Length: 417
Image (cartoon, rainbow, N blue to C red; front, side, top):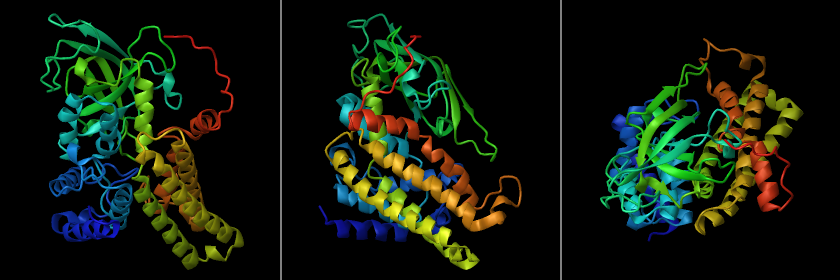
């Protein structure tokens, strides 16, 4: 295994040599509010990365990764961001589902799904939020009912399939029938599969009776409706399941253990890739400082103080992230990951507000409706940072109850389904 600096030099050199030609125009493309940009080209870029072994670098070699150390993974994500390489299209599979299957999946599930994530042959989306279960995720109503097909060895959930591991509907002895609605499903319209948190125990409530299912999207009983926003883009979707099916072998973890598996997935989301995210944050802050100097906003002592506080906050984010990554190295991260999420989300939202004050009144104007410049886009889309992947309110509850051990917040009595 090469040293961290050798590894950093290797990925830096590869990016310099390959972000050229047909891929040169992809620099800076994609990202929050811009997921629609050059999607097909970014997919081609990511498959090009895969052929060179630059996807899933932190996964163990036995699952198709490079087995990179934590420090090497940090180097990879930092160099990727510093090269202004395009936003990834397979990140949900690589950073969320893949580590979840490595931690909780069966050997058959790993053999079926992990190679296709590494090769970027199958794209994934996350089926968590619902119209009445966003931040309060435990309120989900999507249900999955067991249909034990004739010929099942046991006729019960989890009894398995014919052992082929192909994962195609109908290949096994029994299936789950999924009915319900998911919303704010990022890139569902581009995805092949969705990992779905569903209620598999009739009459259950809150965290109990939930299971984590892998559901193919290209089948009858699945309807995907892009949500067109005021910006004219539609990276979010509603996904309707009306009798959609998935095989018994596509249950991840034990029946009824869906909440545990889903929370682990969210923990992986807050893992090492956040270091690359912070490189982007630093570039935004440096550009904002330059703008404040050029337009005179830096002469205002209040603006200067807020810029200084932003710099301090960014350093705090980095040190906190490095501390939290110790939990990632030890396995599935715990609720302490919520500390990092709430801090960076709040910091980034405040940076967008600071950008508007540095711009002054001119920041309220656009050349055309929702023809936004980078600062306007930062201000508008960073508002969502404190909502997605668990709102600030929910993160505070997690920190209070699961990290500090404080009494649980009073909640209305569960009414069931």
